Amino acid sequence: MSEITVNLHECRHCAGLGTCKNGANESSCLACAKKNELHFWEYDNQDKRKGLMCGSCGGIGKAEPLTERMHNRIPVILAFTLVFGSMLIIFFAAYRDSKFFSELLTFASVIVGSVSGYYFSNKEK
Ligand SMILES: [Zn+2]
Ligand SMILES: [Zn+2]
Figure 1 (cartoon, rainbow, N blue to C red):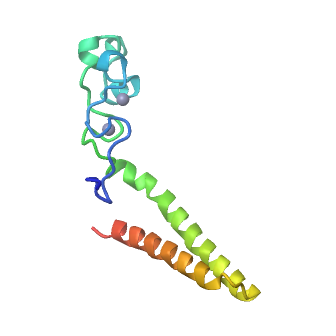
Figure 2: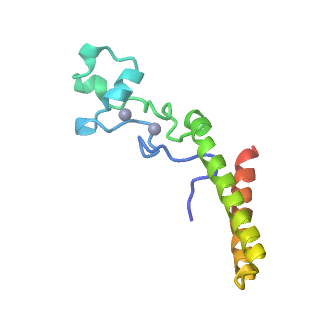
Figure 3: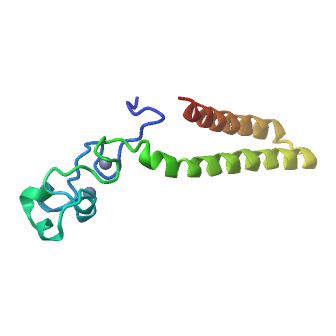
């Protein structure tokens, strides 16, 4: 069982910590140092570079809502591709009078069901 909800993904950059530790000695990485508006002469300062807010998720440890908006397009495209792809397969199988038609129908309805389930549960809230 995963504790991550549908809408909140653990931040890849900070592993859900909200604090960037991707630099040397658990310090924050350069990208996050820039996001935290550190001056360039402070980049090598280990004290200043430590425990900085993760620039990818804004320090909340979850990739929402900042990245969610960008990543939302990929599942949508994927969902429509899957749905239309499986529909095409069904139509093709029906047209060809395939003996696997019932299996394909079950397979496709599972895909369509899970995709629309994921998509609509994601959209709610
Ligand atoms: Zn993060
Ligand atoms: Zn970082």
